[in-house]
Length: 338
Ligand code: NAD
Ligand code: UFG
Image: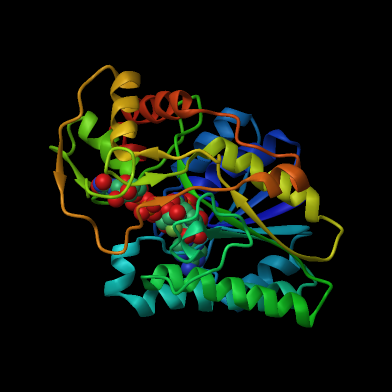
């Protein structure tokens, strides 16, 4: 199958490209490189010994997508492209609705014109309403997200559900990721945030290599086992394998499916720091500070639907996550810039 990856040069896209190539699929990456570097794909090509077709472009450019689709035989689209910084989205909501919502609309229109109707979408656990009941299954209510990034993900889910209902030829998977972390075991590809990282693990990694002085732990008075926030951290290679499984499951079928991609296990911020310290054999300087607005106390997945429907489950534990995150960061202290 030939799979078209929007945003395929980014963190999750590059790992998924690798997994798809290794499974024997052809991969076309379409990315405007607003938050990624071409180098990630060079490295995937080196690791797999296979070629990726790269096309520089923006999903909001429908005419370009028309030309690209007309010239190739695309079987399915995995749609990663979008902006994802929660804090930035509160300052620039229009940029988020434009890239994420209008971008998805433009992509779906172009797919429809080209008769391509198999789509896997990168959604997020952020769509769930705040809840005291864990784990979160796909039936848990969605909420009013606390930021425009989260709203854009929920709006896209609605848009895709309406589309599939109106035209049952569409086959759509909404994959709700929990917290993607880690890196390919080679240490050659990984997460390379531009500027100051927003997420916990890249922040810890950059403290470890001396790019940042210390980690601020946001909140130590949550009703959790040690007072810090609990999340479901999933190894990016497990997440990538989840895309392959979802593609296999929806190929040649019609319908809309929602699957949580998480491990079903939650870890606190302090547990994450400790596990990283063990893997890297060095101390991480940190300070307990106020809660970060918009954060929930805990969030972890009931991943049983994906296990049942896709035969997929996360296989890598915290030790592997930290070992691989550290290998990537220590071998590439400045990310893809060397
Ligand atoms: P990323 O920023 O590394 O990858 C996104 C890619 O999309 C980048 O390569 C960027 O250059 C590209 N892009 C952005 N806007 C584009 C546009 N208009 N046209 C073409 N390309 C565009 O992020 P990631 O962590 O790999 O996330 C991939 C997807 O998964 C995103 O949709 C994100 O919202 C979603 N997601 C991520 C997380 C997470 O914590 N990393 C959690 C849940 C969901
Ligand atoms: N945290 C810190 N210090 C930091 C960064 C994070 O203490 O510098 C804490 C947070 O308070 C939280 C945990 O570490 O308790 C994880 O925070 P992240 O920012 O890494 O991840 P979030 O759970 O807030 O959000 C992430 C993605 C969202 C996605 C969501 C899905 O950023 O895009 O997971 O659950 F929607």
